[in-house]
Length: 386
Image (cartoon, rainbow, N blue to C red; front, side, top):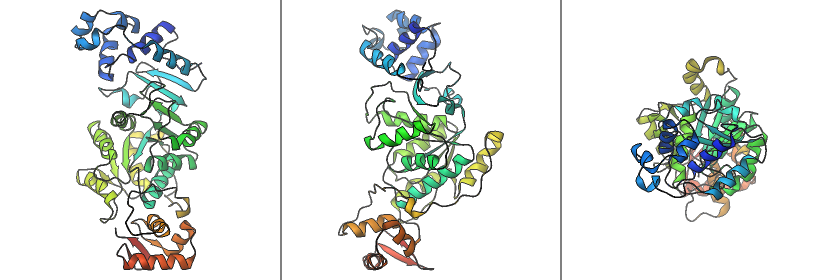
């Protein structure tokens, strides 16, 4: 059986009907459930009673209350197998940190191992269009921190989110994907295989949105508060000043969570968000051990020491989805520039990462340097400048 808030099917149905009422947000639903002894009583209460609780008349007087077709979709999904779950704030598996928030969802839908919600989580977020170095950092930090007992939590988005999930999986660790859709609707579609890998490896997909809910722009800022709200801290790897990751970091600070940021090159526009966070009080980190030492005092035996961080090989970097494309470059030149990023690298590392010949890499680097896109550094290293 799936994990449900109650074995009583009438109580379960009543909650699902309340969830599907148009305009019923998490605060309003929590207010209702706190005011009545049962979900059925809350659903059956008069419009006047709802209005006395402060709910708007437009919501209280809806008839019928809830969407029977959507409720059936949820019930069908919950009944599919024992990895499909419905949790409420009264359930022992509901995340303790999340429960303390005034806008905590009254219900969560999950697919996978819900026991992870009781483990210490570290959220890793960042740009959907990172540099190769940013992907490398996200994977390396996730890999190291997962070996120390953290569940790595992120949003299943392109770029840094996916790299964080993959870093945890590569270490044999656990990861939670917090979704802005229903738990059965994978967004972006490119991550269908990744989401399945997360579940099969003992991870978890979780959402406050019911099964069948498709992606909407307004869902993702709300999703971000869950990413930060479930975690002990949030690490921002790369982010522009317009990145949604800064929303997650701001929410984390408001929720009393620790905020960490990795600094980068002053020439990298994806470093500016992290640098702003650091100026505003986020903790500058250079290794996963920096985060471990900051959080270990409060988490104690729930964490474990691990060997020092080891950087990933450049050949492990996945697609960058970069938005730093420059005009006038052919595909091979742009590819090498994406692989280079703003972190210093040797020509040998670029040859291994790109699959290009040494002669081609040498020629492209010279062209990029003459064009002002690359600079040479001591020790035979190269770094991107634009």
